[in-house]
Amino acid sequence: CGIELSLSEAGCRCLADSAIIDLNDLQRDYPLATVVAPRAAERMREKVSQEDIQVLARFLAAAEQECSAE
Image 1: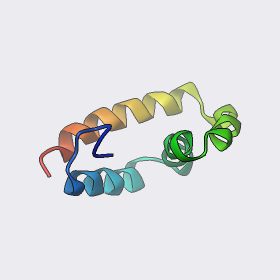
Image 2 (image 1 turned 180 degrees about the vertical axis):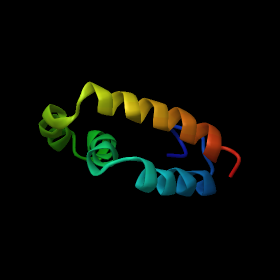
Image 3 (image 1 turned 90 degrees about the vertical axis):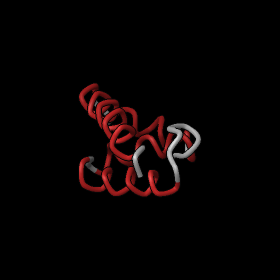
């Protein structure tokens, strides 16, 4: 979190808290799986819609702005 999004430790906690509220299970799990379990992410990819990807992109952009002040 802190490397990819240049957030502080508090900013990363803010991001995690926001993800729990704003994203569904698949939208939270898929990005994590791409990093820690690429094979699982490949299997999950069939369930991830284009809309899910767009939601993730908007969420990350907004959360980075919101949480960077933390």
